[in-house]
Length: 273
Length: 326
Image (cartoon, rainbow over all chains, first blue to last red; front, top):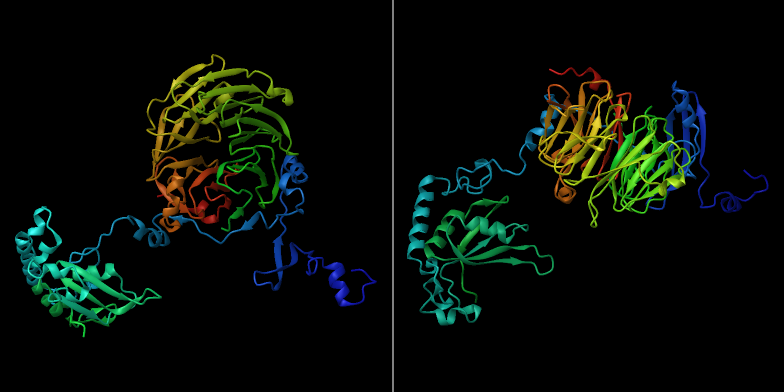
């Protein structure tokens, strides 16, 4: 330190070019300590102390000679010893021996990550029966499933839209009579097979909703109310089923059913006042 | 173990190699500067500045005096290892894919890519008195490769032959005195050879292939001795100089990397038993496929260079040496 510097303010200007105390290093026994000062990401001054162990090795002459080579290229200005910019010690890792306990733990579940082996007994979904959203509901019995399947099959046969021929919108869904009004203003649409599902969680999405109702029967339209700004679910949704009996089934099955830790409330959609 | 992470490259590593004593570790990458490191503490000795394209390959001679590199800027360069200066820059017609010094260090071979209307060729040069005039000299031997391009190359025993691995999975031995093919492996590998590395005594070598296997070949007859099977393309394989082990590194193609979790274990180094062909251990570390592997000549550590741009030097724990294969 220069002797003529008296004020600490001058000292900062004179010695610490970038406002940092100079780094120093000293050797004590088999260890070398390097102290450096730097600014961290928050602009705070931090002190970094690194400890190196000095080891002696007996090496061939050629290797010892190479040890004293002068650095060149991009390392030209590096000090002796590893530069922390280019050389880092990484985290401790262990070799995993196959057949050992830790290997089995980390690799067992990764054997075939692409394929989901779970199959639900209740709804045939790709999850375990324990986690099935229909668990404990009347869906949770084979007979209901079968009658549903039969009804859906029967409906598919009688449904003209399934024949592959073009059907004008007003002919669809048996809406022939009131058809002309049907695709006009929203208020006039046929709400006879619509249900309102409420007490949905915020994280509900259209996909989840579809997932939930498609097991009951085909639906023509669904609307999930979303908060305008956040895009989160407002807690209720309307689902228009193709058939009124499916809508009735939905109310029977889903009303009071737990979903996402919430008890759903399903009722007939009431016309807006 | 606490591996050393060497971060001297800005792009993916293409090849790494130790010198004979193992005190220096050379690495080259798709950026333009090959690096040299002290393998013991990971200190960078220097960079070899001068290439203007991705550096595909490097090799260091027996005495660690000369380094040969081949790059996408259509040159092969011979460097002074100590000072990082260019001794000779040899222009080629397309990028240089492989380059190797012979065991004695008297000769060097390099091969060019099949690109830009040029066919793949293998060149031999005499590097005993290498200086800048080497760029004008004719190579001592040129062998055009008509079938498939060379993707990997080795010198055979006694500097009499060159072993080439090809893009179609073929492996061939060329007699450099006759300048013609003497042995052909046929179709042991069904896809391109990414890497070939000799065992310590040079009697056999291990290949790493895109067909998801690594194989052990006899270096004189090219007889396939062993096969190490994995599920993914193998980019590099190396034989331990002291144990009956091979280490395999690979992963999927670079384009599929972003869709893969590091947890899936695809970027591990995988250790196989040389004789029983069975995998016995894995080591994590890289977060991209491993492109190049090299064992330290003392067998107590190994280095890997990955698509992630890092070189990692791993020193084995005692558990590795104590582990007895059942």
